[in-house]
Image (cartoon, rainbow, N blue to C red; front, side, top):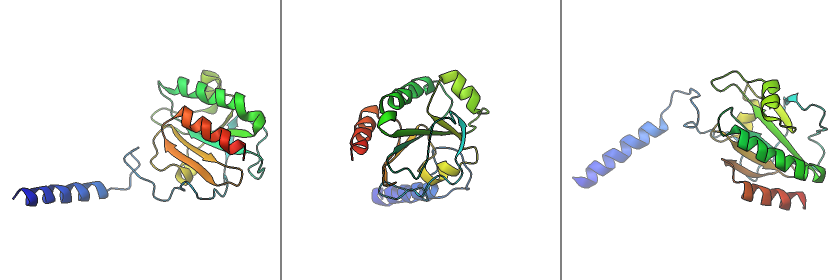
Length: 176
């Protein structure tokens, strides 16, 4: 009886976890079409740079390493932006390009308010149509980071922000 109840519970749990209505309600959705570590990233089809446009960025420049950092406007954002800003300042001359696509999440998002509020000097893009997020983010949670190497292969794709691991991989990838 216990085995039968356990199996029934497992079956109900599995059915509930696999069913969905296709709505976008955040981190409980898994994007199975997103590219993974080891995949080649074909490029930004529609990169709408809306802050810090003066930064020279050419996806075809294979001397650069690209860190894509998806963000959300929230309490922890200031710390996250300052960490990314430090990476940008430390590694941009070595070829690191940081691209942060943002979107409306509960509150309207504008690049101008993002830049003025947090002082980010790396590339900020508008991704309200979720084009870049659909290509790269597995679960739609924020922050989400993707590191693309010089050959345009995805080397890192992860929810959260592990600065030590990410910075170590950035250093290694820039030196390749």
